Image (cartoon, rainbow, N blue to C red):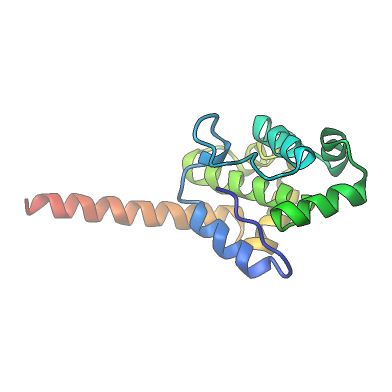
Length: 162
């Protein structure tokens, strides 16, 4: 499920993304999207549909404007009113959530991963990731692998005593 934030998004976005990185990227799945489009604004719903259908694309605000059939100011106002965030924050959040998911669930290089998440290159991903999450993509992956490894070891050791 997408959670939107108003005001200062840095710390809340970081906390949310770190927590959600361990979950599946389920809101993008074709089935079971939890009320994604019942938001009361058809233009914003079309934008969400565009992002959901092709979240790997390098969408721009112009793409969202065209999908919504709104001008920049109208799109911004509709997003803030119905989602509680700007279109830019939504795009950044979707890209970072997908990057977290791929870092945990794939062995792709950061460069390939960046392109799959809609970033132009690995440096763009690195800057965004470090600014919003406070850690580099490589360090995030290493931390998640360490957590997974510890959980696996705990599971194995608990089965010895059964």
